[in-house]
Image 1 (cartoon, rainbow, N blue to C red):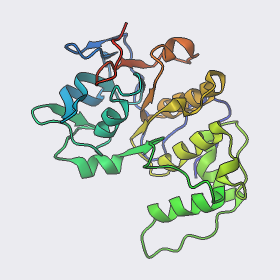
Image 2 (image 1 turned 90 degrees about the vertical axis):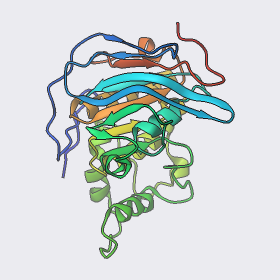
Image 3 (image 1 turned 45 degrees about the vertical axis):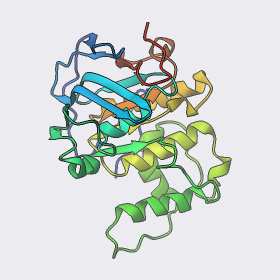
Image 4 (image 1 turned 180 degrees about the vertical axis):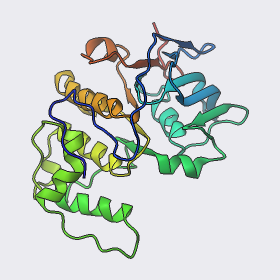
Length: 274
């Protein structure tokens, strides 16, 4: 089993995927009128998007988006509520289908044709209504449920003790104290609740992790803890794409290495990017 990282900036290594060489370069990619900027990849791209967009009868959800995200990097999607952040991330994760006529490849798989393959390789966390934690159960019960979901149907998953919990979540929590198995989800701190959802997603052993609405951790000082752990996951070789509402989030946080920055200004309630 993986071991815990020793501090918030320690790389979190994915046990099944070797870490690629770090990407270099300064964010330069833009879209035609979409208010999007991202980085020019120096490594193999985890995401390649050209003209990706989504419209409904109510209007534009997001796009058009042209985007390159290198493998093994952290990309921060900044955009206001109503700007299409969640829908864009779900599209990259193979859970939502964009409009026809676009080009989208994730981990070398063409979307939406290869949605099932992408869903197996990309994990999600932080999405309201999708991976919410049941506040009435304990951490141990929630962990057992997650392990059962990942196990073959015929395999019985035993009760989760503190050692089993630590083996699963310590790589994500780093040097932050772990919750106890008998702690109710309701009683978890915001940071611990978010890290637990991320740890459950990482139990899938994904090649890419998509995290929505990091500002569910409301205080910026405490949100820094989450970003530091997401940096560690990316440093271990798992591509991370995470969203936040604040348009100046990247400039306000402290980073070991500056992440790829994506400013999304689309959708019916969006604010144009500066």
